[in-house]
Length: 469
Image 1 (cartoon, one colour):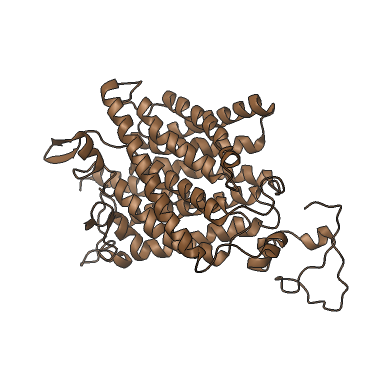
Image 2 (cartoon, rainbow, N blue to C red):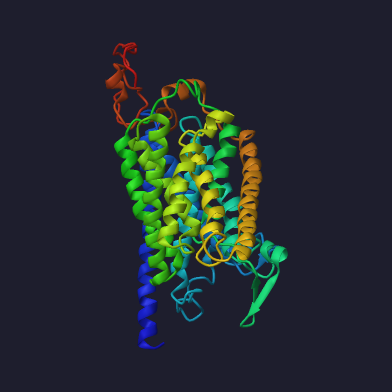
């Protein structure tokens, strides 16, 4: 390599490692966001165990078979790659001489592996937002491993690994609108666009959340008798950290420290700001008041909407996409009341609705080939392709998630006991609590709770009825 090439590889490597760290930060940020939205008796389960449990399961699965299933060269019908080709990252990090293998972008392949791993983690953790306070932790862990294996890894292969939803010669897009050959490479004449995960991450996770909300069922008393978010400052802190980490999510998806990464960074900031304003505008018109919860939710909705389009728009069209995304997501969270499913923390309303809008809406505003901004003829075809990949991703994720959810329902079981749900999932599933609830309510803490004292002779004080936790 020339000195300039070495410098470029070094700079790109540094940027991708930073981006991977930023995306990994998003899982604890999501834990804060979800934790603040939960009630006091579910905060640890929601904040730490569901998100961090998913992190543990997905990291193990990704190292063993996830990379191979997503980016292996032995594709099985364009749906998934052979999980045994690079099992345990065999032949993926160093060659026979101990030299680091170069990845598709020129820097060490192991950097790409780490970056892609973080996407799988956050995608799985998002789903937990539909399950607040009513499921067994062990069943959630089992679901995390099964879902990432049979839904996320195949979708990553289909979209980013040269599979059915990519721009490859043997893809749905090629079958619908034909192919073109340039420089000896044959690709789809109309290439689908998913810059950083509209289909792979948000549509798949949002669809899974919808399926689980239906299969698992509603919380006791929903929708009239459930607790409100217990800590809005925690929610806003989580949203701020998600915003921060998302610059690695979208900017890192350029796979280089270059102008495209800068464009994705700026578009992300623009769309997110507009979405926050769009969400609060709907609140102000509908509810006569903009809220901090709405601002935080609007931030996440904007981040979701711009994810598939971050490298395809201009900053101005990103404002439009984001503003509409924030408004439709704000309206979308009401779908659970219309159709009667308990999407506890609005994973469906935010991730599925905004993810669908971002994936399909980008065809209207794309800088190259956009229906309203560049080439109307190509734009119509792009709109069709974007709709097709969104629907296929949603149907695939929905069917496979349903199979997994039902299998777990009739084996391990999803629901905790009714009395445990009433007492709080933190105590029933983890034998600990995020707050001293016993002291606040006038009740003696259970002897089995970690850090408690077994005072079997002490009188039990009946619960107060004038205090709402």
